[in-house]
Image 1: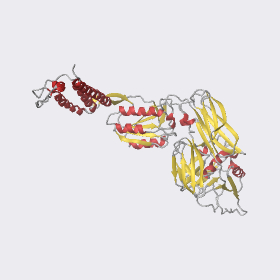
Image 2 (image 1 turned 180 degrees about the horizontal axis):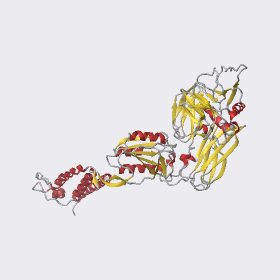
Image 3 (image 1 turned 90 degrees about the horizontal axis):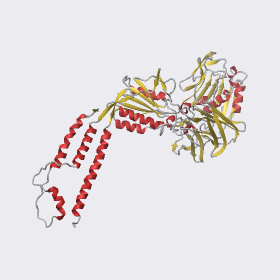
Image 4 (image 1 turned 30 degrees about the horizontal axis):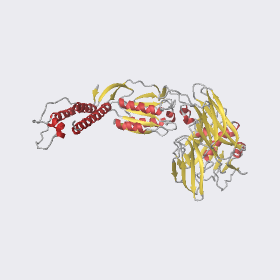
Length: 629
């Protein structure tokens, strides 16, 4: 045992005046009175002819000296050397993603993680500098470079778990900035292991991993989507079993508060099942899917992904102009999309194209880029022609390793059976996201620049079999809905927690009021490029557009369709840079202080001393006033 503040032992000299107070005799002035009957007991203790008396055994004195000793030892900060996960300067990455809400560890994984971080902080030496980073969809530093353990405990208590995925790339960037090239620093990752399997950069100093969680038993709704089909709606639902054993589950589907379908599902371990319902009412509504256990018991330890929502609302017609020499695939596609009014502009005999002066919501340019396209218009390039927005190179035929990048616009796009003869070399600008790419370059990208939305497909549809695959209507429907949303926002798009929603209100709207699933309200002012970002809660949101003519409402949903969060299996290892981290072992030398226990002991003894002092005075008073027989 060692003392971190040994100078506090000088306070032991305070015991001297305490002892002297018990040796002191009080000398009173003698005064004649008529009777001393009521003063006899008091006089026994005060009779004296000298200022000092021999020190007598006194329980109150012993208690007061014990209080003083406990306080002195507490101020001296005694500490035991212990085995710790880290020592010295430490950066803690505290996982606050949705999976940390799981209750396989009581009360939740996140509370267990906070307890782990508290213990880590308590075991550090008093001069250790600590930074704590909360890793959610927007990582934030709770406290930076401090050795004040009270501040650290307050920061840990203030950490909040989220309902979305974690941005580990940004969290690692924060950790690298906090390290400041200090190679003697230790980074401790406290998580259930839901880190990306690759792509994370190396961190300075030593990196340690503390796993949280016990079991990965979980079932999840991994997809819920609506689309217009024929005269009605089509509802697609997918359920995934992330457990290591086969599970049975009941899938219930609601329109509003009304149950309209219920299906039992038997899911093998690690497999998924899907259900598609046809000819649903072609009317606006809020659809809900919910999983429950057939035996009416608790389904799993992670209820956040057991419920999902999908929104359908009628969209106003969108005017789309197709500029092409003739492409039956695009013409048929535009004619089949709900809420789209397609128009066509074809070259004249001399090859010139006259662009109508009427405005259009979207211009689809199939291998052509004629003059007359309004500046700032939303554009979809197919068989991308040369243009001033980005670079278009020569064609290439090397289609090796074509992959579909994870993006909201590529959801449910299966490219495995698509073949492309050749494509033009596209240089994707910084503002664009590459959606589909081969080793030789991007095939499809989309993005927004200064409020203008642009997408590009780098090959001729007639030089591929894409129009013959199911990926064709899905991909182009996603692109067109992104380029020109069917209403003030794309209600068919399911957001994830933390995603922003672009809102384009009508000119007459004076105020926008957004109500969240937990009935929080946010007031927005209509303006250009308006984005609502307070999407922390799972469920459906109501967006109220208030104008002089009245109030209209539209809805959108936020769901947890994230395999990395729903797969609750705690990872025994994580990959950081080129290193594979296993569960950390307490092998460093740390310190555990126990001054709070001594301070608590002093408080308890003080209460005992206070009670005994008042009991004795009360007994003395009762004995004094009690009449004699």
